[in-house]
Length: 319
Ligand code: 13P
Ligand code: SF4
Image (cartoon, rainbow, N blue to C red; front, side, top):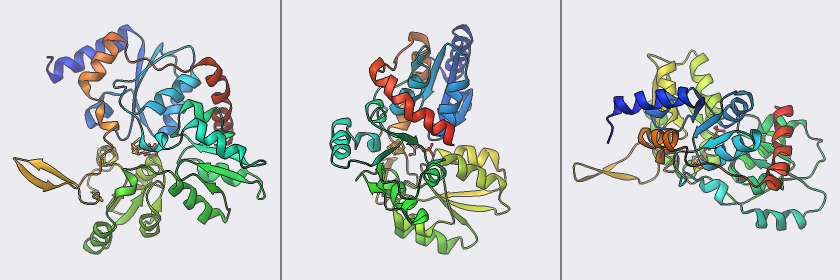
């Protein structure tokens, strides 16, 4: 087994030799964010995929992010370090179920969150991410009937801001749904000056408590540009790495999940970090093996990709 420094050296050698670019989402382990050529939210990763001239894209994130990159760049090799890196939210919406929902709602436009499979995107009119969902929905005619999925928390949030009545899919991210409201309220009391930053995938009660609701990138930018010094953060705790790096001297307090305990020194200890176990499957070692063996390659059937690119292109134009 290679040591950490050797892994880094080999990854650097391989990416140069193979003209590969390493992209990482903000929820990745710190060492993967540090070694990546580019770190971003799901919209920024898609945009970066569209403009790269690398032959290989290694997407350190989850499967739907690799699929989106592959749909955008059908002629490039797109790899992910672990095939198990799925997404509970994407899994909550199967293409056949969406097709039935669509059939039972003639005249509706389908707007899907990017956290969906390629097959779901192929049935979609416009894809959105947490960065641009509000902006895109606001551009649609006020009387346009919309089916929105799969994240009902994001959908509810958009409905509440815009006054629309989009029909919502009953899906949610298990990570963002499990923040402890009790702990959040206690943290608010303990740090009265702190601004609460929350991702729109969080439950309504968390979003109602938040000062700022936004995508991972929007929350990071808010923390960077704000005069405030303390932030209570309700999104996957991987984002704290970049927040701390970009905002020396500022304090970031993660909201813990409900009743999560980890074993430290044989003792059950409450865990303060809310981590996406799918995102955390990727490691430095797996990234090295991924580059070395050019595995695991993302494949999207060409007839699916041909349809799925259309709502992604509409998103790029509208955002
Ligand atoms: P972002 O669009 O903010 O990157 O979020 C993606 C995601 O999976 C959130 O759980
Ligand atoms: Fe999916 Fe939630 Fe993990 Fe994001 S945090 S990848 S929405 S399971």
